[in-house]
Structures are given as structure tokens and as C-alpha cells.
Length: 361
Image 1: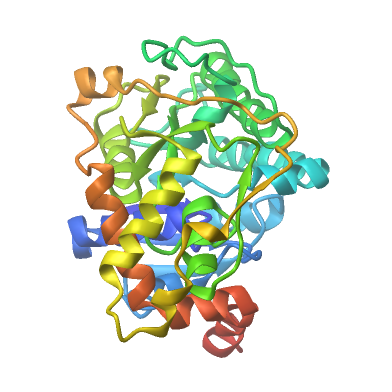
Image 2 (image 1 turned 30 degrees about the vertical axis):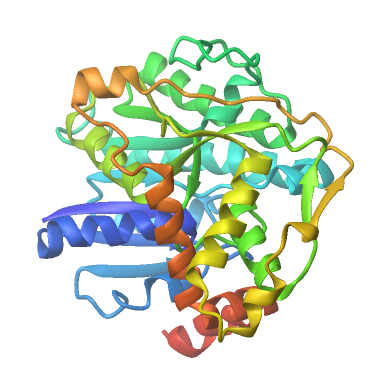
């Protein structure tokens, strides 16, 4: 049975990836989920799989070398899928050192522990061991408003925020291990993810939650900043394909081919909420374009991201299967059907779940 070590598996993308993997491989794999359980890590995201015999949760910080070394010493890890990261740009502007600590030093710990566990006496690595570092398109910087301009794997790294700089640094660390030690790793850079279980500091769940509550919908600057949107389960599939079929040492861009201005996203959400909410639901009266509130632009706000997934399509056959018009409906329906999850997340009560489930373990 192949054993996966997933870091940050209680977060948004990590928990969706774990669901995808168990749906695909069922009992043929084992997953060890390591998460520090910061504000964005929520074990309720994995409530339906927590009692599986082939699933283990370990609360640990990726910066804790002793804790991570112990996991490798006690388990024969075949795959590392490294999601764990501080990921919100606004928070990075206020506290950049936290992002350097987790995203750079934490990645160095993961690399060193995997290298120590997998390296053989002759300097080669045990057969079948692979490390996948999950990163972002933000490391490439900002694109001009030219529909023919895209980020490719060869695009120079040019980060503009403390968050993207910390992710670019971690990318470079992984590349250095590949080049120096021939370490068996890949790097993936994805566009903006959306879907179930996303913490409501990010645009789509924030707008959904605020609109349902009749709160202002904050829009940075003129609202015309462009992002490329990728449904999270399409991303999970891509990660699995890179792990299984990707050429070691290669970087793969994972994009959604769904470019939208931020203001477009907000208007689509409002229109979809109006369509999906029954007239009997009192929240429907809250949903209005009058809630849109333009605020001072974010510092260093990149104008446009657009990622070209040409390489992963040509090499591995992956392509984004979920059109935005379909994915956004699935996402909004999930939040409407999981109102209690949103209430617990926004109140902080979700953090009590770990204590109730894992006390004494």
C-alpha cells in the first residue's frame, strides 16, 4: 500500500485533494495528514473520512524538524504532497515574517526530512519516492492586459507581495534540491482555486457569506483585476497526475482557462444567489448590487494572472474539465447547503472540533 504524507491537509485545497484521492483509490493507499490547524485548517472538512483505517491525522507544525523527522522515521513515506502554507496576500502585507517562517523555512524542513529518509548511501534516492511542492501562479508577478499574454513554466519569477515572494522562495528551494541532489520532486503552480471548504477570507466565499448576511461586498480599486479560476477538484486531479506521470524535476502550470475580472465574479455570485435562493428565504432580500463597495486598492496589487496549462495537457493529458459557470453553481450550492459550517468557521467554533475529536489521543 502506497503511503502519502499530505501537509496542510485540513485546509481548503488539501482537504479536497484527500477526498479526491480516497474517492479514486479507496483502500489502495494510506494518507497521513499533517496540519498545524491554524485559523484556515479545519478538521470538519474531513469529518467523513476521519475513521478510515488508512487515514491518520497528526497535529504538527512543518517547521518542527523533530516532529516531521519522527513521522518519516515511523512510516515508510512514498509520496509527499506539500500544501501547507500561509496563503492570504493581505495577511502577508501585515505580517510578512510569518509567511517566511512557514512557507520558506517550513519547506526547507520538509525537504530535509524527506531527503534524510529517502537518500541511499550512494547519494541516489529510493525507487518510487516523490515530493510534490504545490505553489501558485502569483510567483510570476503580473501580466499586461493582453489576452495573448500568459504565464508559462519558463516565465521569469517576479513576485510582488510578501506572500508570493515567500512562495517563490520555496519554489527555488525545491528547484535547488532537484538540481543539487537530484532530489525526486516536482513543482506545480496553479491559478486561483475555488470550491467547497474554502475559508471565507478569500474572494468567492467572502462574497457569498457577506451577500447572504446583507454586508458590504468590498472591491479593491476599480474591480478590474483579472484572475484565472480553477475548480479545486480539477486541481486535485492534476496533482495526482503529476505525482504518477510527471517527469521528475519538472515544473507544471495548472490553469483553469477561466479568466474573470473581480467585479465580474461578484456580479455572477449575486446573480446565481438570486437564482438559487427560493423566494421564501429571507436572505434573498439581502442579495443586491447595492452592497458592492469600492475600497482602497491593495498594496502591490497585481493586475492580471493567466496561466497556460499547455505543458501539462501535452505531457500528461490533463485539462480543466469544469467550466466556471458550472463550478460556481456547485460552489454556491455547497455553501448554501452547509450554512452551519460557515457559521462555525466565521465564529471560530470550528477550532473546538479538534479538541472534541482528538482529546487524549
